Length: 254
Image (tube, rainbow, N blue to C red; front, side, top):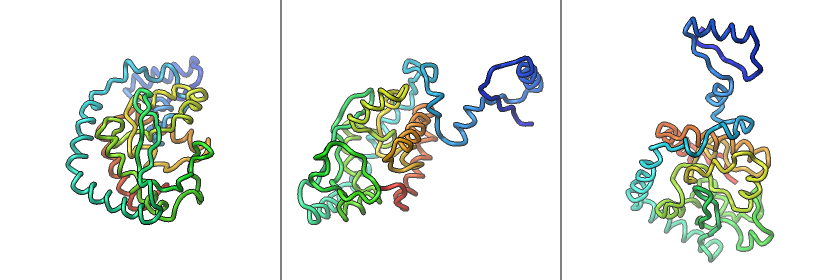
């Protein structure tokens, strides 16, 4: 045996005897919840409570270095990003006119609102009925917009948000304010996803893609909580690699 997986259930005499024997044999004792996290890359919402992790204890020094890397990468990539964004802007203009950019209030780190910017991929009156998730086959999306969304080209202006400090290159997807208010009331510890800067790409984006239902939102949050809990350079490098594959395949777009 390499280790002992322990379920989260009431302890009894036999339970204690088995644990004592495992400790005597120097076996690794692995809580079932942690094993499930490692295998799925998600933290169950049932495991997220006041004892899960506190903001006072959540002070990874990596976040300081990560901010510097975000700025450095954006500046180094600017000679490539700027001509590409100019090309996309022309395509949007000749396809559907102005405005070329779409601005929307999102919720950032520590719950602070900011104006997210992206290339407009929908019709001008797309939000006249209020905020709504984009769905498969959404008629509000223009033909060119569908192509831009598939290969994530509409996200390029968000590097401006990265330079401003509103976002990181990697992190949970910034949510709309209306949805955030709703989720804070119904999901325990929802605000802990705001302990890190939101990102252009992230763990949920590369594993799940776009969400447009309550069940998918729950799954996305489990990925977000996993990222908050395990935020590190190795995890970010893994996300970068999966992001490249996502862009090449168009996975999870709407």
